[in-house]
View 1: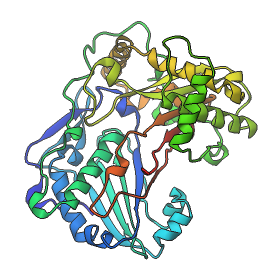
View 2: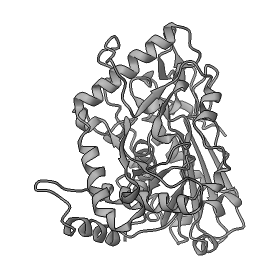
View 3: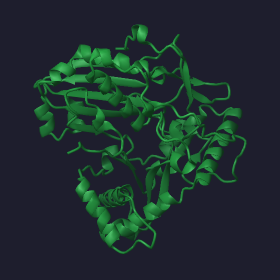
View 4: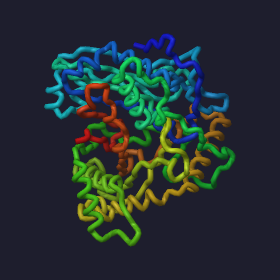
Length: 435
Protein backbone atom coordinates (compact mmCIF):
# COMPACT_ATOMS: atom_id res chain seq x y z
CA UNK A 1 0.00 0.00 0.00
CA UNK A 2 1.40 3.38 -1.00
CA UNK A 3 1.82 5.70 1.95
CA UNK A 4 -0.74 8.51 2.10
CA UNK A 5 1.22 11.58 3.20
CA UNK A 6 -1.75 13.98 3.22
CA UNK A 7 -0.45 17.51 3.84
CA UNK A 8 2.92 16.10 4.99
CA UNK A 9 4.15 15.46 1.45
CA UNK A 10 7.49 17.29 0.98
CA UNK A 11 6.81 20.69 -0.56
CA UNK A 12 10.09 21.35 -2.39
CA UNK A 13 11.35 19.37 -5.40
CA UNK A 14 14.67 17.56 -5.11
CA UNK A 15 17.13 15.86 -7.45
CA UNK A 16 20.39 13.94 -7.29
CA UNK A 17 22.49 12.73 -10.19
CA UNK A 18 22.99 8.95 -10.22
CA UNK A 19 25.48 8.64 -13.08
CA UNK A 20 27.96 10.79 -11.19
CA UNK A 21 29.36 7.78 -9.32
CA UNK A 22 29.54 3.98 -9.43
CA UNK A 23 26.34 3.48 -7.45
CA UNK A 24 24.26 2.97 -10.62
CA UNK A 25 26.23 -0.24 -11.29
CA UNK A 26 24.41 -1.97 -8.41
CA UNK A 27 20.98 -2.43 -9.96
CA UNK A 28 19.05 -4.34 -7.33
CA UNK A 29 17.02 -3.90 -4.16
CA UNK A 30 18.71 -4.44 -0.81
CA UNK A 31 16.55 -6.27 1.78
CA UNK A 32 16.83 -6.50 5.58
CA UNK A 33 14.72 -7.82 8.45
CA UNK A 34 14.98 -6.43 11.99
CA UNK A 35 13.55 -8.64 14.74
CA UNK A 36 12.10 -7.18 17.96
CA UNK A 37 11.51 -9.29 21.08
CA UNK A 38 8.12 -9.46 22.80
CA UNK A 39 7.69 -7.12 25.74
CA UNK A 40 5.23 -4.89 27.53
CA UNK A 41 6.36 -1.83 25.56
CA UNK A 42 6.47 -3.54 22.17
CA UNK A 43 2.67 -3.56 21.89
CA UNK A 44 2.55 0.10 22.92
CA UNK A 45 5.22 1.65 20.73
CA UNK A 46 4.99 -0.65 17.72
CA UNK A 47 1.27 -0.75 17.18
CA UNK A 48 0.16 -0.15 13.62
CA UNK A 49 -1.36 3.32 14.03
CA UNK A 50 1.70 4.71 15.79
CA UNK A 51 4.16 3.28 13.26
CA UNK A 52 2.12 4.63 10.34
CA UNK A 53 1.88 8.09 11.87
CA UNK A 54 5.59 8.33 12.71
CA UNK A 55 6.57 7.00 9.28
CA UNK A 56 4.71 9.88 7.65
CA UNK A 57 6.58 12.34 9.88
CA UNK A 58 9.94 10.72 9.14
CA UNK A 59 9.34 10.70 5.38
CA UNK A 60 8.35 14.36 5.36
CA UNK A 61 12.03 15.31 5.60
CA UNK A 62 13.24 12.84 2.93
CA UNK A 63 11.94 13.93 -0.48
CA UNK A 64 14.26 11.68 -2.50
CA UNK A 65 12.53 8.63 -1.03
CA UNK A 66 9.57 9.78 -3.16
CA UNK A 67 11.73 10.07 -6.25
CA UNK A 68 11.64 8.51 -9.69
CA UNK A 69 14.46 7.87 -12.11
CA UNK A 70 14.66 10.49 -14.82
CA UNK A 71 16.70 9.85 -17.95
CA UNK A 72 17.80 12.97 -19.79
CA UNK A 73 18.30 13.42 -23.56
CA UNK A 74 22.00 12.73 -23.01
CA UNK A 75 21.12 9.53 -21.07
CA UNK A 76 22.26 11.06 -17.78
CA UNK A 77 20.30 9.60 -14.87
CA UNK A 78 18.86 11.57 -11.97
CA UNK A 79 16.69 10.58 -9.04
CA UNK A 80 14.04 13.28 -9.15
CA UNK A 81 11.25 14.18 -6.74
CA UNK A 82 8.38 16.39 -7.82
CA UNK A 83 5.47 17.20 -5.45
CA UNK A 84 3.16 16.99 -8.47
CA UNK A 85 4.14 13.41 -9.40
CA UNK A 86 5.42 11.68 -6.25
CA UNK A 87 6.47 8.03 -6.11
CA UNK A 88 5.57 7.18 -2.51
CA UNK A 89 7.13 4.33 -0.52
CA UNK A 90 4.91 1.42 0.49
CA UNK A 91 4.12 -0.07 3.89
CA UNK A 92 2.25 -3.28 4.74
CA UNK A 93 1.12 -4.77 8.06
CA UNK A 94 0.25 -8.39 8.77
CA UNK A 95 -0.35 -10.83 11.63
CA UNK A 96 1.48 -14.17 11.49
CA UNK A 97 1.05 -17.46 13.40
CA UNK A 98 4.81 -17.98 13.76
CA UNK A 99 6.36 -16.79 17.03
CA UNK A 100 9.44 -14.76 17.80
CA UNK A 101 10.64 -17.74 19.86
CA UNK A 102 10.45 -20.01 16.81
CA UNK A 103 12.39 -17.55 14.68
CA UNK A 104 15.01 -17.20 17.41
CA UNK A 105 15.30 -20.98 17.73
CA UNK A 106 15.92 -21.07 13.97
CA UNK A 107 18.77 -18.60 14.31
CA UNK A 108 16.67 -15.81 12.79
CA UNK A 109 17.55 -17.36 9.44
CA UNK A 110 16.47 -15.25 6.48
CA UNK A 111 15.27 -18.39 4.71
CA UNK A 112 12.96 -19.22 7.65
CA UNK A 113 11.56 -15.70 7.68
CA UNK A 114 11.01 -15.87 3.94
CA UNK A 115 9.21 -19.20 4.29
CA UNK A 116 6.66 -17.49 6.55
CA UNK A 117 6.17 -14.42 4.36
CA UNK A 118 8.04 -11.92 6.52
CA UNK A 119 9.96 -10.58 3.52
CA UNK A 120 8.68 -9.33 0.15
CA UNK A 121 9.39 -10.33 -3.43
CA UNK A 122 12.45 -8.41 -4.57
CA UNK A 123 11.82 -6.55 -7.83
CA UNK A 124 14.34 -5.73 -10.49
CA UNK A 125 16.19 -2.59 -9.47
CA UNK A 126 17.30 -1.69 -12.98
CA UNK A 127 16.87 1.81 -14.34
CA UNK A 128 14.33 2.03 -17.16
CA UNK A 129 12.31 4.80 -18.74
CA UNK A 130 9.10 3.31 -17.36
CA UNK A 131 10.46 2.57 -13.90
CA UNK A 132 8.06 3.60 -11.13
CA UNK A 133 8.75 1.08 -8.39
CA UNK A 134 9.01 2.73 -4.97
CA UNK A 135 12.46 3.58 -3.68
CA UNK A 136 11.54 2.11 -0.28
CA UNK A 137 9.23 -0.75 0.71
CA UNK A 138 8.40 -1.74 4.30
CA UNK A 139 6.49 -4.68 5.78
CA UNK A 140 5.71 -5.00 9.51
CA UNK A 141 4.84 -8.49 10.78
CA UNK A 142 3.21 -8.97 14.18
CA UNK A 143 4.23 -12.37 15.55
CA UNK A 144 1.99 -14.68 17.56
CA UNK A 145 3.84 -14.21 20.87
CA UNK A 146 4.08 -10.41 20.69
CA UNK A 147 7.34 -10.07 18.80
CA UNK A 148 7.64 -7.87 15.72
CA UNK A 149 9.63 -8.22 12.49
CA UNK A 150 10.26 -5.10 10.41
CA UNK A 151 11.29 -5.78 6.81
CA UNK A 152 12.60 -3.05 4.53
CA UNK A 153 14.22 -2.90 1.13
CA UNK A 154 15.47 0.06 -0.83
CA UNK A 155 16.66 0.59 -4.37
CA UNK A 156 20.44 0.22 -4.16
CA UNK A 157 20.92 2.30 -7.28
CA UNK A 158 19.96 5.35 -5.24
CA UNK A 159 20.55 4.45 -1.59
CA UNK A 160 23.29 2.49 0.11
CA UNK A 161 23.00 0.62 3.41
CA UNK A 162 24.23 3.49 5.56
CA UNK A 163 21.68 5.90 4.09
CA UNK A 164 18.68 3.61 4.40
CA UNK A 165 19.45 2.40 7.93
CA UNK A 166 20.02 5.99 8.97
CA UNK A 167 16.49 6.62 7.73
CA UNK A 168 15.07 3.61 9.61
CA UNK A 169 16.80 4.89 12.77
CA UNK A 170 15.32 8.35 12.07
CA UNK A 171 11.85 6.80 11.74
CA UNK A 172 12.38 4.94 15.03
CA UNK A 173 13.35 8.17 16.82
CA UNK A 174 10.23 9.86 15.47
CA UNK A 175 8.14 6.91 16.69
CA UNK A 176 9.64 6.82 20.20
CA UNK A 177 8.97 10.50 20.97
CA UNK A 178 5.73 12.08 22.16
CA UNK A 179 3.63 13.76 19.49
CA UNK A 180 4.68 17.19 20.77
CA UNK A 181 8.35 16.37 20.14
CA UNK A 182 8.14 14.79 16.70
CA UNK A 183 11.06 15.66 14.44
CA UNK A 184 10.28 17.05 11.02
CA UNK A 185 13.81 18.09 9.99
CA UNK A 186 16.18 15.91 8.00
CA UNK A 187 18.84 14.29 10.17
CA UNK A 188 22.39 15.32 9.20
CA UNK A 189 23.41 11.78 8.18
CA UNK A 190 20.76 11.85 5.44
CA UNK A 191 21.85 15.12 3.85
CA UNK A 192 22.82 14.57 0.24
CA UNK A 193 26.40 15.65 -0.41
CA UNK A 194 26.64 18.51 -2.85
CA UNK A 195 30.12 17.84 -4.25
CA UNK A 196 29.89 16.12 -7.62
CA UNK A 197 32.26 13.32 -8.50
CA UNK A 198 32.04 14.36 -12.15
CA UNK A 199 34.80 16.91 -12.64
CA UNK A 200 35.54 16.51 -16.34
CA UNK A 201 33.44 14.32 -18.61
CA UNK A 202 35.66 15.23 -21.56
CA UNK A 203 38.79 13.88 -19.86
CA UNK A 204 39.21 10.26 -20.87
CA UNK A 205 42.36 8.61 -19.54
CA UNK A 206 44.12 6.39 -22.06
CA UNK A 207 43.22 3.28 -20.10
CA UNK A 208 40.26 2.51 -17.88
CA UNK A 209 40.62 1.09 -14.38
CA UNK A 210 41.03 -2.67 -14.18
CA UNK A 211 38.24 -2.84 -11.59
CA UNK A 212 35.56 -1.54 -13.97
CA UNK A 213 34.76 -2.85 -17.42
CA UNK A 214 32.30 -1.91 -20.13
CA UNK A 215 31.03 -3.72 -23.21
CA UNK A 216 28.86 -1.66 -25.54
CA UNK A 217 28.80 -4.34 -28.22
CA UNK A 218 26.79 -6.86 -26.19
CA UNK A 219 23.18 -6.68 -25.05
CA UNK A 220 22.83 -6.36 -21.26
CA UNK A 221 21.21 -9.78 -20.84
CA UNK A 222 23.91 -11.43 -22.97
CA UNK A 223 26.55 -9.64 -20.92
CA UNK A 224 25.12 -11.05 -17.69
CA UNK A 225 25.10 -14.56 -19.15
CA UNK A 226 28.71 -14.23 -20.29
CA UNK A 227 29.94 -13.14 -16.88
CA UNK A 228 27.94 -15.64 -14.82
CA UNK A 229 29.10 -19.17 -14.13
CA UNK A 230 26.70 -21.67 -15.71
CA UNK A 231 25.85 -23.54 -12.53
CA UNK A 232 22.84 -23.33 -10.27
CA UNK A 233 23.36 -20.73 -7.52
CA UNK A 234 23.07 -23.42 -4.85
CA UNK A 235 26.11 -25.16 -6.32
CA UNK A 236 28.32 -22.25 -5.29
CA UNK A 237 29.39 -22.80 -1.70
CA UNK A 238 28.68 -19.76 0.47
CA UNK A 239 30.08 -19.94 3.99
CA UNK A 240 27.55 -18.53 6.44
CA UNK A 241 28.78 -18.26 9.99
CA UNK A 242 28.89 -15.97 12.98
CA UNK A 243 32.12 -14.57 14.33
CA UNK A 244 32.36 -12.55 17.52
CA UNK A 245 34.12 -9.20 17.77
CA UNK A 246 36.46 -10.85 20.28
CA UNK A 247 37.44 -13.46 17.68
CA UNK A 248 37.95 -10.72 15.10
CA UNK A 249 40.25 -8.97 17.55
CA UNK A 250 42.16 -12.23 18.09
CA UNK A 251 42.53 -12.72 14.33
CA UNK A 252 43.86 -9.19 13.98
CA UNK A 253 46.29 -9.67 16.86
CA UNK A 254 47.45 -12.92 15.25
CA UNK A 255 48.32 -10.95 12.11
CA UNK A 256 50.14 -8.30 14.14
CA UNK A 257 52.08 -10.90 16.13
CA UNK A 258 53.02 -12.90 13.03
CA UNK A 259 55.81 -10.52 12.08
CA UNK A 260 54.68 -10.03 8.45
CA UNK A 261 54.01 -6.32 8.89
CA UNK A 262 56.88 -4.04 7.96
CA UNK A 263 57.73 -0.93 9.94
CA UNK A 264 54.92 1.62 9.63
CA UNK A 265 52.44 -0.92 8.21
CA UNK A 266 49.14 -1.76 9.83
CA UNK A 267 46.03 -3.82 9.15
CA UNK A 268 42.40 -3.03 9.80
CA UNK A 269 39.87 -5.46 11.22
CA UNK A 270 38.04 -5.24 7.88
CA UNK A 271 41.12 -6.34 5.92
CA UNK A 272 41.72 -9.24 8.30
CA UNK A 273 38.07 -10.29 7.96
CA UNK A 274 38.29 -10.02 4.19
CA UNK A 275 41.34 -12.29 4.14
CA UNK A 276 39.75 -14.80 6.52
CA UNK A 277 36.43 -14.98 4.63
CA UNK A 278 38.20 -15.16 1.26
CA UNK A 279 40.20 -18.17 2.43
CA UNK A 280 37.07 -19.92 3.77
CA UNK A 281 34.97 -19.34 0.64
CA UNK A 282 37.76 -20.12 -1.82
CA UNK A 283 38.71 -23.38 -0.08
CA UNK A 284 35.06 -24.45 0.17
CA UNK A 285 34.48 -23.87 -3.55
CA UNK A 286 37.75 -25.56 -4.48
CA UNK A 287 37.06 -28.57 -2.26
CA UNK A 288 33.52 -28.72 -3.66
CA UNK A 289 34.95 -28.69 -7.21
CA UNK A 290 32.90 -25.63 -8.14
CA UNK A 291 36.15 -24.00 -9.26
CA UNK A 292 39.44 -25.53 -10.35
CA UNK A 293 42.39 -25.06 -8.04
CA UNK A 294 44.33 -21.87 -8.78
CA UNK A 295 44.92 -18.24 -7.85
CA UNK A 296 42.00 -16.09 -6.72
CA UNK A 297 40.99 -12.45 -6.98
CA UNK A 298 40.21 -11.05 -3.54
CA UNK A 299 38.40 -7.73 -3.34
CA UNK A 300 37.29 -5.47 -0.54
CA UNK A 301 34.78 -2.67 -1.05
CA UNK A 302 36.17 0.82 -0.60
CA UNK A 303 34.25 4.07 -0.10
CA UNK A 304 35.87 6.40 -2.63
CA UNK A 305 34.89 9.58 -0.83
CA UNK A 306 37.60 9.40 1.82
CA UNK A 307 40.66 9.20 -0.48
CA UNK A 308 39.02 11.71 -2.83
CA UNK A 309 38.54 14.21 -0.01
CA UNK A 310 34.76 14.36 -0.40
CA UNK A 311 32.27 14.73 2.46
CA UNK A 312 31.35 11.46 4.15
CA UNK A 313 27.75 10.48 4.79
CA UNK A 314 24.77 11.56 2.75
CA UNK A 315 22.62 9.68 0.30
CA UNK A 316 24.54 7.29 -1.87
CA UNK A 317 27.98 5.88 -1.16
CA UNK A 318 30.29 5.67 -4.17
CA UNK A 319 32.33 2.50 -3.89
CA UNK A 320 35.00 0.70 -5.81
CA UNK A 321 36.13 -2.87 -5.34
CA UNK A 322 39.80 -2.83 -4.38
CA UNK A 323 41.23 -5.95 -6.02
CA UNK A 324 44.20 -8.09 -5.03
CA UNK A 325 45.40 -11.11 -7.00
CA UNK A 326 46.07 -13.74 -4.34
CA UNK A 327 48.34 -16.69 -5.02
CA UNK A 328 47.09 -20.21 -4.59
CA UNK A 329 49.22 -20.65 -1.46
CA UNK A 330 47.78 -17.52 0.18
CA UNK A 331 44.27 -18.78 -0.44
CA UNK A 332 44.64 -22.47 0.38
CA UNK A 333 47.08 -22.34 3.32
CA UNK A 334 45.49 -21.10 6.60
CA UNK A 335 49.00 -20.24 7.85
CA UNK A 336 49.18 -17.60 5.10
CA UNK A 337 46.32 -15.57 6.61
CA UNK A 338 48.63 -12.81 7.99
CA UNK A 339 50.32 -12.44 4.60
CA UNK A 340 46.99 -12.25 2.76
CA UNK A 341 45.58 -9.72 5.25
CA UNK A 342 48.69 -7.53 4.78
CA UNK A 343 48.36 -7.61 1.00
CA UNK A 344 44.64 -6.76 1.14
CA UNK A 345 45.38 -3.77 3.38
CA UNK A 346 48.21 -2.57 1.13
CA UNK A 347 45.90 -2.87 -1.87
CA UNK A 348 43.22 -0.72 -0.21
CA UNK A 349 45.84 1.85 0.83
CA UNK A 350 47.08 2.01 -2.76
CA UNK A 351 43.90 3.67 -4.05
CA UNK A 352 44.79 7.35 -4.22
CA UNK A 353 42.37 10.19 -4.78
CA UNK A 354 44.04 10.87 -8.14
CA UNK A 355 43.57 7.27 -9.31
CA UNK A 356 39.93 7.25 -8.26
CA UNK A 357 39.21 10.60 -9.91
CA UNK A 358 40.76 9.31 -13.13
CA UNK A 359 38.55 6.23 -12.83
CA UNK A 360 35.46 8.43 -12.49
CA UNK A 361 36.55 10.64 -15.41
CA UNK A 362 37.06 7.56 -17.57
CA UNK A 363 33.71 6.07 -16.62
CA UNK A 364 31.75 9.25 -17.22
CA UNK A 365 33.46 10.12 -20.50
CA UNK A 366 32.96 6.54 -21.70
CA UNK A 367 29.33 6.69 -20.63
CA UNK A 368 28.84 9.96 -22.52
CA UNK A 369 30.43 8.56 -25.67
CA UNK A 370 28.23 5.46 -25.53
CA UNK A 371 25.10 7.58 -25.06
CA UNK A 372 26.01 9.81 -28.02
CA UNK A 373 26.59 6.79 -30.25
CA UNK A 374 23.12 5.43 -29.53
CA UNK A 375 23.96 2.50 -27.22
CA UNK A 376 20.71 1.41 -25.60
CA UNK A 377 20.63 1.70 -21.80
CA UNK A 378 24.34 2.47 -21.42
CA UNK A 379 24.10 2.15 -17.62
CA UNK A 380 23.62 -1.61 -17.99
CA UNK A 381 26.90 -2.12 -19.85
CA UNK A 382 29.23 -1.28 -16.94
CA UNK A 383 30.17 -3.88 -14.38
CA UNK A 384 32.76 -4.61 -11.74
CA UNK A 385 35.00 -7.32 -13.15
CA UNK A 386 35.42 -8.90 -9.71
CA UNK A 387 31.72 -9.82 -9.67
CA UNK A 388 32.23 -12.07 -12.69
CA UNK A 389 31.51 -15.54 -11.31
CA UNK A 390 33.23 -17.19 -14.30
CA UNK A 391 36.50 -16.37 -12.59
CA UNK A 392 37.82 -17.38 -9.18
CA UNK A 393 36.90 -14.26 -7.25
CA UNK A 394 35.52 -13.53 -3.81
CA UNK A 395 34.94 -10.22 -2.12
CA UNK A 396 33.85 -8.75 1.15
CA UNK A 397 31.94 -5.63 2.09
CA UNK A 398 32.13 -4.82 5.80
CA UNK A 399 28.93 -3.13 6.97
CA UNK A 400 29.77 -3.22 10.66
CA UNK A 401 29.51 0.57 10.99
CA UNK A 402 25.99 1.06 9.63
CA UNK A 403 23.33 1.92 12.25
CA UNK A 404 21.17 -1.20 11.97
CA UNK A 405 20.75 -1.51 15.72
CA UNK A 406 19.99 2.18 16.32
CA UNK A 407 16.36 1.58 15.30
CA UNK A 408 14.74 1.75 18.76
CA UNK A 409 11.07 2.49 18.21
CA UNK A 410 10.57 2.95 21.96
CA UNK A 411 10.50 -0.67 23.07
CA UNK A 412 14.19 -1.45 22.68
CA UNK A 413 16.66 -2.08 19.89
CA UNK A 414 16.24 -5.00 17.50
CA UNK A 415 17.48 -8.28 18.92
CA UNK A 416 18.82 -9.36 15.54
CA UNK A 417 18.95 -8.22 11.92
CA UNK A 418 19.33 -10.38 8.83
CA UNK A 419 19.96 -9.73 5.15
CA UNK A 420 21.37 -11.52 2.13
CA UNK A 421 23.27 -10.65 -1.01
CA UNK A 422 22.06 -11.86 -4.42
CA UNK A 423 25.65 -12.10 -5.72
CA UNK A 424 27.12 -15.49 -4.78
CA UNK A 425 30.76 -14.38 -4.69
CA UNK A 426 30.21 -11.14 -2.77
CA UNK A 427 30.03 -11.60 1.01
CA UNK A 428 28.56 -8.92 3.26
CA UNK A 429 29.78 -8.77 6.86
CA UNK A 430 26.64 -7.90 8.74
CA UNK A 431 26.88 -6.63 12.32
CA UNK A 432 25.37 -8.57 15.18
CA UNK A 433 23.42 -6.98 18.03
CA UNK A 434 25.37 -4.95 20.60
CA UNK A 435 26.06 -6.78 23.85
